[in-house]
Length: 292
Image 1: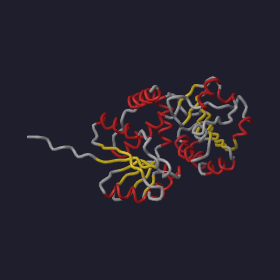
Image 2: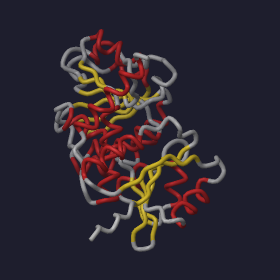
Image 3: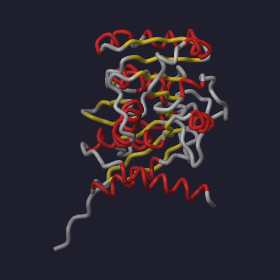
Image 4: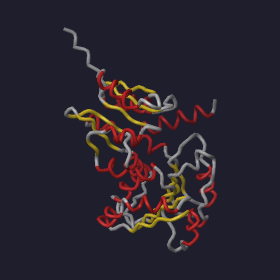
């Protein structure tokens, strides 16, 4: 008697463009590892038809999807139910159907925290954290960072008012967890003393995409500091190369990419995959591509 073939549940990553996304490789590895019957593909949505595209995918039997640039804000508006971290971030990167409703989550921040604490072994409790940038990436990271109970989080942005406006949304959470919050312009970082300093500096700005170095005083990137860039690649970003010259320990955002995907997989399947082997596999693939 032959066994019935196992049905395969369909998931996609939706973006525009989306051909560069590494999510299919990550989720294929999670599927092999866990034995979950998952098919994961890319789906490019027209810039003016995100909602129609994903509703069609769901109507055709899709179980869930990830959302990447430039649709995370539209995904937030599409969701019938939002997780607290999605509400705090004001953006959604993970969606699924449950009880006939479209649920939305933001797994970017928890992916960042897990990479720093679990993969890099840097506990964030009582640490001094500097976040560079006040856009969507920083917004998604702030609540998960606050929940780690660091001593202080400084958000610095080229436009000081934008940093202040963002931080205002998290004052209540910071008070709840006993975290000091400060916001200002990048030009104000020089006013921090070496004694005040930072333990972790996270580049959540677009500077690395543009090949620019954010104006961070060198003394904030010295020995004992973890300099983390949410961008990743086969070679260090300009920010990480500079931080290494200043004596900091450095890490790119490849681990964050894998960890946020693992959280999405858990949302969908109720199974948490091991991320270390997938991260090693992805890192090797990046290096191989760079050597071609």
